[in-house]
Length: 289
Image (tube, one colour):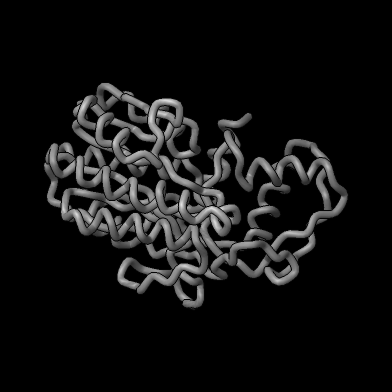
């Protein structure tokens, strides 16, 4: 099987590259080979490669910068996925695309399920929702996987930032009123592999939108505490953590207070489940060591 992965250096793409080699040929296109803001390039590359499966792991993820760059955010997050869906339909192949908890406003008190009405708070969330809608409108074979709070041992993310700041500072203030499920990129990639293997086995399953995060939930403050505890177990000195509210740490783009996603549909319809976030974090840190 020939799998086209779009996005080379992102957290999820790196983990996909580690795990999907057993499927056959992997063709990975980075920004230097494919500009996702150029529709003609997208069509030309897909038609030239003629893959059996497309995985779109590329996205515009600068949440705050998107507020001042909406055109770029929508080109990459909304228009490009729609074009990929059209090309996948032409080839009669599936498209796997990653979305986000930011399509919701965070006002619900319980975890969001796939039937809840999206209501993004900012440009990034609106662009990702528009990408979902563009894929759905094509009516081809697709999996839209909404993840949240993704981290890994590479790139720029909360885990690496906290590991650095906890050792640089004596006191660190972290938001405590935003709740979600920290999700290791390795979990996303492993679940993606399981979904592909189920599709290859011709097991009955439904295409569509699914939530894919670690199990359980915490706040950013709780996530930072877990990172700090792991550092202390390594004999390292850490800063004192202080909880603050979102209003104490204003940013250009508003964040949802509740980012918890109900992933039971993915388990029910595809037989794929995810570990608790604390278990996944330990596995991630073990690989880092």
